[in-house]
Image (tube, rainbow, N blue to C red):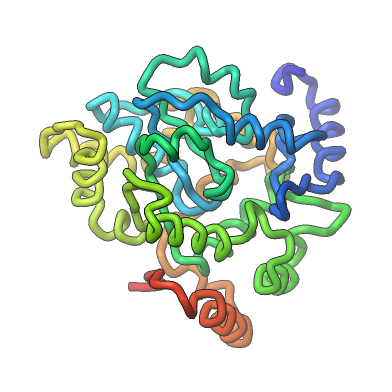
Amino acid sequence: MDFNALDPQEREKLLSDLRSKKCPIYDECMMPKFPTMMPDPVKQMEAIRNFDSRESDILLCTFPKAGTHWVHEIVSMILQEGAQYTEGHKGNVMMEAVDLDQLSDQPSPRFINTHVAFRHIPKKHVDNGYKIIHVLRNPKDVMVSLYNHAKNDPCTACTEEDFPGKWDDYIQDMCENKHNFYGGFFYYEREWEKAKQTKAVTNVHTVFYEDLKKNPVTEVERLAAFLNKELSPQVMEDIVDKCSFTKLADATTTGKKGEDLTPKFSLNKQNFIFRKGTVGDWKNWFTVAQNEMFDQMLERELKDSNLQFTYTW
């Protein structure tokens, strides 16, 4: 079905029906309602696990709202060795959202992304030590960003279960690991941490969202080195400039990266991918009681972890 070709009334009916459906569950992980995931998430997830990775493939692994679109554009520019916007959406190469047969025809190097848990990413990619970029962001800002995304994205909102509902209900759910997209933030990041510590995965480049915000040129230099790309200082500065939040959001919404279809899906008819892109916005959302509740969960979930996050500057 060509969603874009539907008339507005047909489109709204389709979106309303999608919002009312429950999200599929796979291996105790709540998954978005992508057409590839419904009605049989097992088929898509097994296809991801058995994906025929190439040695030149680069896999971007992130929990939702950790800066995936931002890093995807930065890396795409590094790979093309120039600060020109790439046309299209990172969703076009998102493993759980597309027919994986589409990726087989893409030329190398393929730059692919996913939010699925470590145990679900392509086995061949992990076993052979192919390149992986793993991006992390502090969980409080992730929670706020995911809430605002989920309210407007029909693949994550669920009227039948009233998710994400009001902020108070949502943050309570997150603290109890209910509606745990991709297994939930802490399960997701602890699994990655263990995999790195035990050498179950190698050749991983780790990026923290907050470091990329604070020292963008340094982090772009690190990414370029990992990707074996020698770029001039001017090109790297140009990439940082073009990928600033304001300019990248503008390029997306004004069509410089191709047609922006997000408003046609969105409940509020706006792009729900780009909101603020700041560090510390959680302070505008968490009440004192909610912050205390969340901190207790942080202490409990990370007590045996070396993970450390930056929550404000």
